[in-house]
Length: 269
Image (cartoon, rainbow, N blue to C red; front, side, top):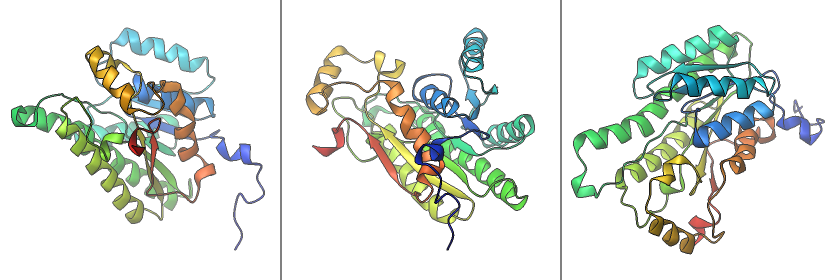
């Protein structure tokens, strides 16, 4: 059997030049770091946002222009299936192809489980699990069609999950968030098998990342976390860039259905 890249220098396998990547929730935090990493690897980039201001989105356009890649933004509520289908179709129209999709949009509400309202429950599940599925489903249909047209061999879906998929976080109370991420990882593994002919499906599960999402938490929570994280610190968003590039690139061509933890050892003790 002959392998397409068997003689390629290893660094060339990480290149995403000529590819197009879509990142949901890509205007801030982990999503933005992933988008920057993919762009730095050569990919043209599309991101979705839902609540960012027009002026902030404009600033992002300048940032990606300086990276020398094509960049576009799309307002999208990922919890609505039609929004995802429309967004992916528009990306295909604007860029001419789609190779990598990062279903990253997510929210977390810290409420004791017995006090969660139905609205809060459905909001978290709607974005974190339903939204990720709808994004991936739209991507899969695009990948399948492009493969039939000879445009690509295998698309790449990289879910942003969480260490919360496998551990119970403390002291914050976020049972619904944890359940959404655990469900997301199981979903990814199922899709990896179903879609193996035209897509690779993997998860990145970050630990405590130094983003705006953590800024709202009490300082005493951080002290507790640092006592539980062997690395004794938060992860900077830029430290995730290489992980997303690796999973999105040919450097991980035989990897599918996997969950990659980036938690400073948090899940090990």
